[in-house]
Length: 340
Image 1 (tube, rainbow, N blue to C red):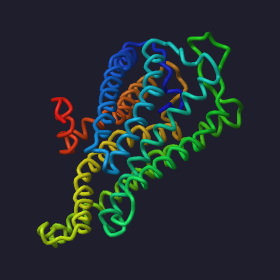
Image 2: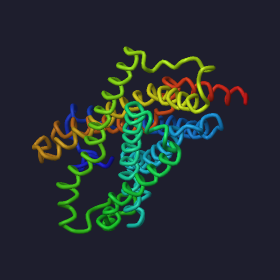
Image 3: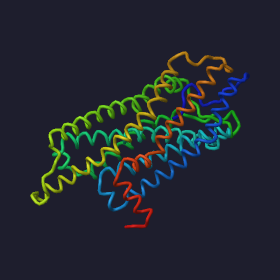
Image 4: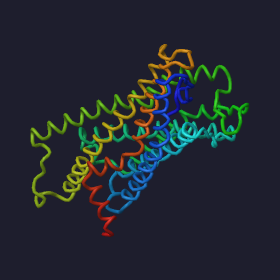
């Protein structure tokens, strides 16, 4: 996520304490992003390969997982990659034209928005599956999922389309030190004062609230179900084929819950801190005007650490699937061992 208040610019320093703090941030930007991008690329590609297998793609969750992997990869390469080049090597190779400037920022915000709302959509859908199983059985899960993820991507693209019109390239500097800036004063005010509220609410706080409430509803219903033994199925030989199919659907819905809860917890841990930090920072006097201040160096280090935490959310989903999804582990092991 692009920063507010120009935190992404390296603050100059003239004393030992500030130099140490900034040097730590520089080391983080030099060595950690390649690791995150490597883990994320391998993990997201693995996720797509696993979920396109015949035994896995029958579930609606596979469609969400594939869309999430693509969105996460886009976020890593449109956001973290170019921030790494700028902050570790002072190279702005992507900003060779206004088109590149506009598109990259648009892709970063769109992918972050899309990833957040895919996870939210999965949570809300699972709430309906758990609380209203009869409704769930009557619909086509895969078709519903395809329509939903297509609608979400269109909405996220449209919501962030103002970057395509409001951002321009600052051509007054050399090619490798250019920056994207607002096309005019009114857009600058919108981007600095209005957009932070919109983006943090739509990309973080609203999805986080829905995820928390959704998880509470799922846990409550599953707990009630276990206490009342209402989730137990009778012997298969006493079931009609329709009831058997319904019970298979219910079983698959329950199997997804550990993965979903793990994804939700990771999303909250990695996205809430930086959004809260930047929002508070942008509407307070935390940053002071002294370019050489120790406070600014500390803010830069904090922003760096929270950025790494944010982008790690786009890199670790495959690991989470392995830890919490037995079917995913089984299919991945079968692929690694060459078994069909």
